Amino acid sequence: MSSQPNRPLSPHLQIYRWQISMLTSIAHRASGIVLAVGSIFLAIWLIAAANGPDAYASVNGLAASWFGQLIMFFWSFALFYHLCNGVRHLIWDVGLGLDLETARLTGFAAIGVAAALTIFVWIWALIA
Image 1: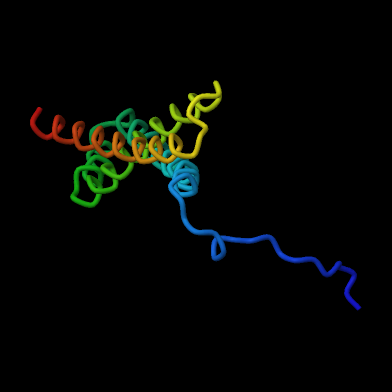
Image 2: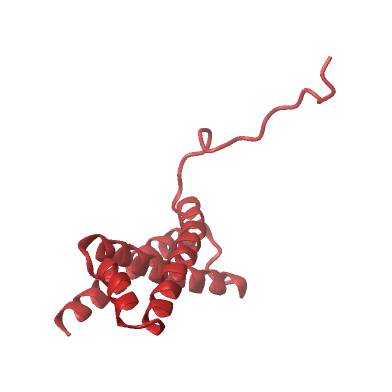
């Protein structure tokens, strides 16, 4: 006989219906991971710049490629999303906005503001 007691398993993602607060919580953690990986690339870029024009040109060539620009676009969205959702969490920490409807609306707002900031910065960077 098994030494583990016969207990029910905890409900999981297959049981619960997806909600915006669930999505924003998972996305906040994922954006933190994306920011950490992007910071490694930023450090590599800075080290290459310090090591001379040849090293900088090779790393900057990757960053300036269409693939590098796409990665940087998503990295900037992760940055703005993590910022917006972090502000949302700070507001929750003081006890505001904890009711379900406000939490739902601020979840959509965090995503929308992050998307708007990302688009604004990229348009500004392309015309400058």
